[in-house]
Image 1 (cartoon, rainbow, N blue to C red):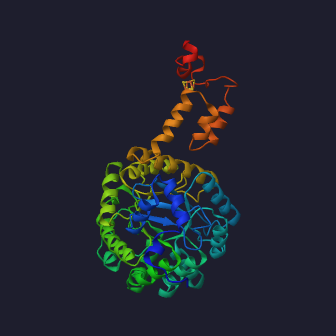
Image 2: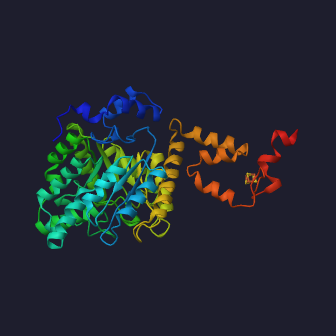
Amino acid sequence: MSPARSHADSLVPPEAVLQRLAAEEHTTSDALRELLLDGRATVLGSHARVGQIRACVVGAGLRTKVNANFGTSALSSDLVGELHKLDVAIEAGADAVMDLSTGGDIRAVRGAVLARASVPVGTVPVYEAAVQAAGRSGGPTAMTLDSLIAAVRNHAEQGVDFQTVHASITRSQLSSGAVERRRTGIVSRGGALLACWMRAHDAENPYYERFDEVLDICRGYGVTLSLGDSMRPGCLADAGDEAQMTEVAVLGGLVQRARDAGVRVIVEGPGHVPLHEVAAQVTAIKRACHGVPLYVLGPLVTDVAPGYDHITSAIGGTLAAMSGADFLCYVTRAEHVRLPNADDVREGVIACRIAAHAGDVAAGLPGAREWDEAMATARKALDWPGQFALAIDPTLPAEMRAHSDAGDAAECTMCGPLCSMRVTSSEVLA
Ligand code: SF4
C-alpha cells in the first residue's frame, strides 16, 4: 500500500504538474488548486504516473477533454493491434484513453498499455473480475465480493490513472421494475454484469456496499474514481427515465462520500439523449452531483445512424460541452456494430475533439476562440501551411490539397481565379 497522504496531497498534484496544468488552462495555480480541493475539477494521473505522463485536469471552466476507448475483446484479442490504436488515439489528440480489454491476458495488455501510454489510462475493473469468473465457471455470476474489490486494487497497484466503478446500481433499483419498463434495459456493460450478479445472488452491489474500501484504494494510489452510470439510457426512449434519474440521485451521495474521503472523483453520464434534452440533462446531473466533473459518453442524439455514430455523438457532445460537461468519451462509427479499427479510432477522436472545441468556443472558455481567430487570419492570407498547422486534424486537409489540381496556385480548386479571399485582397485591389 502506498503511504497515507492528506486529502490535499491526494487531490492536488505536485507543484510542477500543477503549474503546467494551470498554464495550459489559462488560469493560475492558486485558482486551479482551489477547484481541485473543492472537487469541481479533478486531475487524471495516479500518484505513480502523474509526473511521468501528460496528466490532464477535467472540470469547471477548463478545456473540455477527450477520451478514446480501445481494448481486446473475446473475439478479437490482438495486442499489437490494440497498441496501434492507442498510438493512433494519442497522435490524433486524445487527452486520455481507456483500456476496455476483455480478451486474452488482460493484465498483460494493461501492463503494455500503461508502459506505452503518455496520457492518463482508465480501466473498468469489473470486466476483469467477470473475465476471471468466466474462466472458472462460464459466467459473471461466479464473480466474488473479494474478486470485485481485488480487481480495483490490482488495477490501482499497476498504476491505472482512473477507474470506472459501477457503485450506483442498487438492489432497490433492480427490484423497482424501472429497468423492465425501459426499451433497451441496462446498456452499460459494467452495470449489466453487476445486475446479473446481484440478481443471481439476491444481494446488494458489492461496490455500493463496500464503497469505503474502494475509496481507500483510490485515495492511496491517487486513482480518480469515475463513478459509472449503469443506467445510462441506451436509446432516446429511455433518456431521463426513472431508472436513470434514480441512479443520478445515488451518484450524488457517492460523490459526497468520495469528497469527504479526499478521493478524486468524476461522474459518468449518458448515453443516448435527444438533442433538446442534452442541456437539461447536463445541468440536472451536475446539480445532483454537487458540481462534480461530468464525463459523458456522447451523448448520441439519435438512434438511427449506425455507422455514423461519431457524428451523432459529436452533435450531442458539442451541446453537452457547451452546457457544462467536462470530459467527452468519443464514440466511433463502429459503435453498435463491431470493434473499432484504427481508422475508426482516429476519426472518432477527431470528431470528439471538434465537438469539445466547438462547445468550448460557445461556452466562452479562455483561449478557445483565439484558435479560430488564428485560423481565420491564415485562411484570409491563403496561408496553406499555416491553416494545416492550426487544423484539429493537420493531416487530412494537407493531403486533400496535395491531391487536388491546385498545384502552385495561391487559391484552391473550389473557386479558382474567382477566389473571394484573393480578389478582395489588398494586393489584387491595388
Ligand atoms: S478558392 Fe474559394 S474555397 Fe478556395 S480558398 Fe479561395 S475562397 Fe476559399
